[in-house]
Image (cartoon, rainbow, N blue to C red):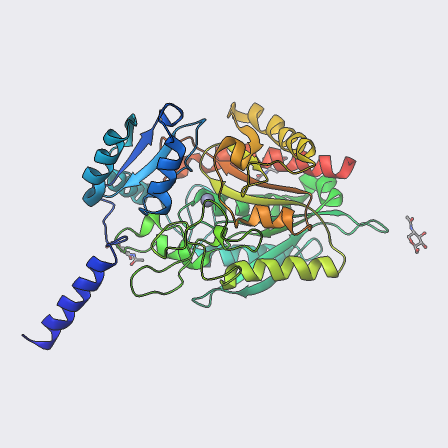
Length: 420
Ligand SMILES: *[C@@H]1O[C@H](CO)[C@@H](O)[C@H](O)[C@H]1NC(C)=O
Ligand SMILES: *[C@@H]1O[C@H](CO)[C@@H](O)[C@H](O)[C@H]1NC(C)=O
Ligand SMILES: *[C@@H]1O[C@H](CO)[C@@H](O)[C@H](O)[C@H]1NC(C)=O
Ligand SMILES: [Zn+2]
């Protein structure tokens, strides 16, 4: 046996032991929709078992109210269907061939060097756009590097607002793209930046009502990986923490508030892997440090937005428990103010409620930390379009419609905070 053969054999055995979690092609992968969880005995727990213990990739969280979408690569379809049937689940095929959808998206998506909102752009294009925006409007905008990723990419926050004498303005923080495959999220955060900075004459009111801090891409390593040609890359969710068998930590399970609670996994191969400890990752740490430091400097944090897809839901804490925060009514009123401005734009409907009320637990998210740390009263995860027809592969032709309606929600929120 030649040495290279021995090495290959050894790697092959290693891969088998590790359960081959990511060595699939999207070709032939399906998204199944489970529709009767509430009627199945212990249905929620059974789905949670599939997610946490069997490492299936859930596109929507296990839940009793809506459907649950689960991505299944070809080599696990039989296993999945057997489990469904044995346990009395009813399911449909939501996306019959994920690979086909990805190829369609690739053909439509025209990239760089200039920023636009008809396509999903690369991180370098986004960075240049944000830097240029701030440079050309330094009276209202400034950019700060808040840290570096595992692969040494800069993480940048842009602050936008007009100084108002003798007033501590309420401040908003927004994280986009913490989950790599949710391409619509960085498209939205950059759209908001573009409106506020390059169309600022339309937003005099808003710019004096609030200061907005936007982190357009919280997981640039993961984002860039989803744009690569590696097998299975488009569906990447986590950061790019290196590992022999299963790289990546779910940054939205890595924040230090009830870290490791329900809806997280200690298994490296899981899509909801929480990491080795709270804030083990440079990306989540950079966000925490920035918010703490600004608070000490006197920034009046009021609202935290985590922009995700998909579900069309405006989710407020808690995400770690079924209990509600004491000021839950306030949070719902806040969410309703956003959605009341959003829906009239294109008729897109959003549900408002707590994470666990509408879905199920997922501890260690940035939203729970923002609230639990005491820095932000109004914390939310906004799950934007769609409701599963395309899921994470939302066609680029929907970017502007999605951006326009969510932008109206943000404007309404600025007004709400100002009047408070
Ligand atoms: C702002 O505060 C300064 C110093 O305390 C004071 O002189 C000034 O009159 C104030 N301006 C307004 C508009 O209240
Ligand atoms: C600028 O903002 C106004 C007010 O929201 C909007 O009507 C207009 O379309 C915006 N312009 C651009 C180029 O987006
Ligand atoms: C992916 O493949 C296409 C076509 O072969 C090529 O043009 C493109 O540069 C590749 N992208 C990356 C990131 O390697
Ligand atoms: Zn997400």
